[in-house]
Length: 472
Image 1 (cartoon, helix red, strand yellow):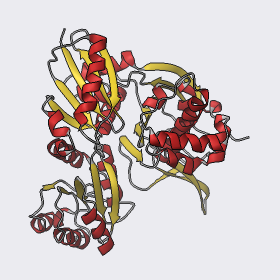
Image 2 (image 1 turned 90 degrees about the horizontal axis):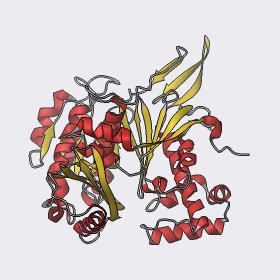
Image 3 (image 1 turned 135 degrees about the vertical axis):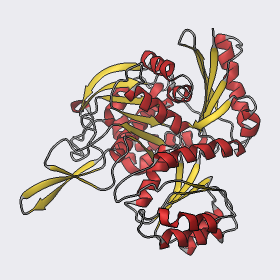
Image 4 (image 1 turned 90 degrees about the vertical axis):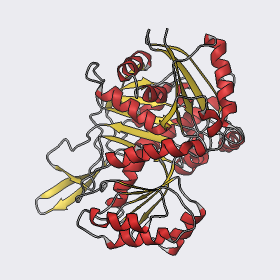
């Protein structure tokens, strides 16, 4: 036996997973409420106690972790144009597992600088201008940041003609220079920035409350949890040189604070009559719905869907909905049980709504445009209609009595016919919550991580858009 321990310090729960590398099996899994308010090590100890009750005390070859606790990796992005360099920076940060607190465009205003001073990020991404293009804005923004009292790491990834000046101006900051995130119009180059973000994460995440103490128990904190999940999904889709993947996929991670959507797909237009508009999309794309979550952000679901609609979908009353939202806001660790059918129904509807909102916001859209030659269709974002795998993870989905019905809300719906979501797909469930753990493991043992995912992820069968709940 060659056991290793994989830890995910989540925003709501700390999960521990033990794996035997020799036999390529999961030995056990346990979780406990994340205790970031006082000492994150306490939650880890509770989870480890439960794991040891299941599998006994083991001597692990190594212990690796990812984390989204203590607010995760908070980033601010600054670019020139909203749809171009600012969007390129945003995509780079999200793909690296960051939680973006603000995106600024054009020159930083006094109000912008006051916000940054009052809410300094873990990392600031300074972008702007294509190579050889506008250099005044990014330079002016560097000068504005240099006047702040707050200090934080800054990644400079804009117009290469202005990089040297920006680095000199920001000499009092910890700076990292990367190639431009958008060197040419509508051309992305986000990989170098993502590597830099991850390097800074390794350096700075242990400053989170209680993390310094917990890190002494680990062989390494490798990445933010969302980055680990994205790595696992890329591995599952593409495979390795020795092990085939399953192909393009669409995934939703329904969390307590946010709902993350991932697409591992090209997403190019599939019809010659469709014209692609806007910035190119990364093959591995992550979006974050910070207002949509099962506990901390449950009221955000209510704001989008509406109390009356949630009551209708759950066969309860509006008063029941409001009472449940209040209850889970006070007890964010609450998990419905089978002896409480009303709460179970409400939780299922909240999860279904979170999946529907996140998948709609993530997928591309079509719109009609009229030309002298007639009607053409303009695509913005990714076309995911041909994706044949949908993967769901997150505690509310894992514990649901009918996770397939929740997953089907990620499919195409006649209520929103111009949303390019999958039409037919095999539904997969991360029943044992292993994706983040496998993303961490893949750093050292990618083939084993892939085989474990193929073995452990549960297929719930094929579903088509006709199964999606529609309005009467």
